[in-house]
Length: 496
Image 1 (cartoon, rainbow, N blue to C red):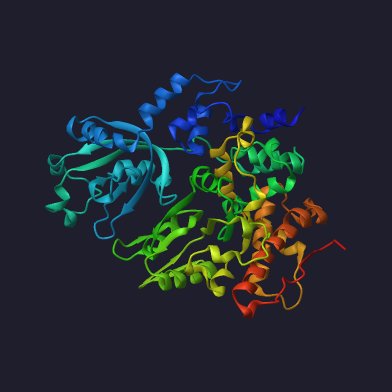
Image 2: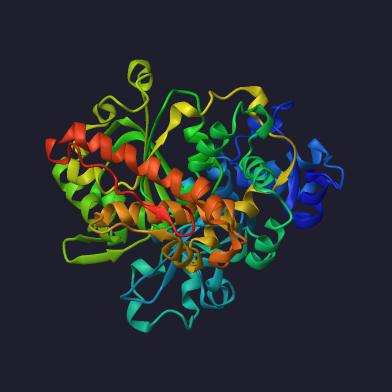
């Protein structure tokens, strides 16, 4: 049985046929990968064929564009219809009134114009409280001002007033976007059916890349390095790469659990906590936050942002005014790199490419590792997946669940020998990156004896050391205090 047959046999319905090389059908729809694969799973037959007209009709009916929002409001408010469609939704519970409301950020609908009544909330609250933004099939209706004459048990009498009697768009029903239960044990068991090289190719297919389009194993592994923050909490990375290598696509389209911010203005309020709105920022509701095109991002207050980042990157907590928050999102800086600096392979001062807020050694030291994006080929047709592959939506849900599995870190602690006097930040960075590689490449490993010391060294520790070593070298160029400070000689127990 070849690898493709084993893939379909082991993962069954979690495998879809992706053909991004020959068709622009999905490109025209402008859908993120996780939604595209959800549609493929819904419409494909067992041979990977689907009726484009049927799928297009579904998209038109249930995946509206921003331009359709006025039409939706007309149907709901004026014509009194109920409208159902796929959307990203967030909820808010008013501390003073106990009233539950929701927002549709992609359509500009805010909390003040909505309501979730008690019976609906009782049915869907378990799904809606999972994160700041949750994807699902929502159904909207309208609650007119006249409807407020009816007593609702969810609304305390003290909250009823002139403002509360204004019309609201109400949530009628909600169905989670993920139509199945994630079985981590089944995923781990399935990994045992494949060699490491086969698994690397499977991972690439899961995120829409064709393994046969890469020239070397190093290119493949460097590409997969971008997935490390998907599986490990608070893993902070910097990547500089040539244009066209797919940074924005991977961080912005593959997973619904992350956030990509491209250029523009970034404030402490947006990133961490907005005191005016009393709302946590991007860092609190996502697995990772990627600052793409970092050279073009400006910060409202450089010193304020630098201080907030230093505290968060070190401990995972942040303080804004009298608000203290905790989060586990990784922070990734992505930027382009000039050819003359790239050709030096990391031995020139690369961080001059970053904006001034990051020109401080104490901040840079808190980033765990560096991705040499110039080892990733520029995107071309032969790199686009064309065949059976893991459903991206399923795979990214798996990665999200793996973040909370502490088994892997205990294995890493057991396998890595830390030399005396090793810097704490270096040790944590190497161990955290090694843990992420272990989760990604060897999810079936549940105790140290499940992986050979040499395999762990090759795929986990050595790669983690190289990523951290680049940070150390760049720190020496940035600040004379760090000059000549080499990375401690971490080794693997059982390897001579």
